[in-house]
Every structure is written in C-alpha cells, then in structure tokens.
Image 1: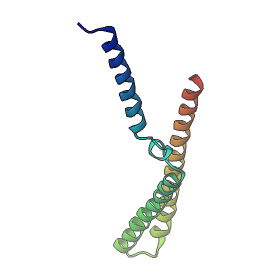
Image 2 (image 1 turned 60 degrees about the horizontal axis):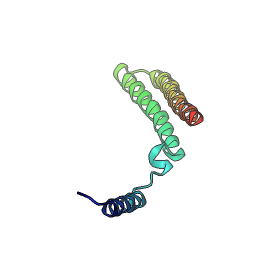
Image 3 (image 1 turned 180 degrees about the horizontal axis):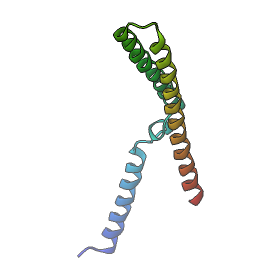
Length: 109
C-alpha cells in the first residue's frame, strides 16, 4: 500500500509538473486569435480590387466581342465597384458581429 508520506510526495510532484506545463504552454496572442487590423484592411482592399478587376475583364471582353466603344467596360467597372463595396460591407458586418458576440461572451463571465 501507499503510505501517507508517499502520497504527499506524489501530490507535490504532480503540482510541480502542472506548474511546469503551464509555464511551457504557448501563449496565444491576439493576432492568432482574432483578425488583426492589418489583415482585415488587406482583405477589404483585395475584395474591392477583385470586384473592379472582374468588372474590367468582363466589360473589356464584351467590348472586344461586340466591337463596341468602351460602353460595356464602363458599365461593368461600375458594377464591379458596387459588388466590391457590397462585399466589403458584408465583411465589415461579419467582423463587427463577431466582436459583439465576443464582447457579450466576456460580459457574461
């Protein structure tokens, strides 16, 4: 059987192991846990430029196909701009909702 002295030594050893594990545990920075502001800004810029680029490509392709003046190019650039802005706004709302949910969760604790 295990004596009380051995049990006390085992308990002390387990506590030391736990404190060492806690000290070696990786610290999660806010950048790994959430979007950093720079990542969010780049995401929005890329969404806007992608919308403009796709609109430019479609408009230019249609103008070449139909042999028209840059009518479709102008129309689709504006359509691409509108789509890019809409996507940016959706991303901003998604991030805002995520931050509000985290704030509410922290408020409950």
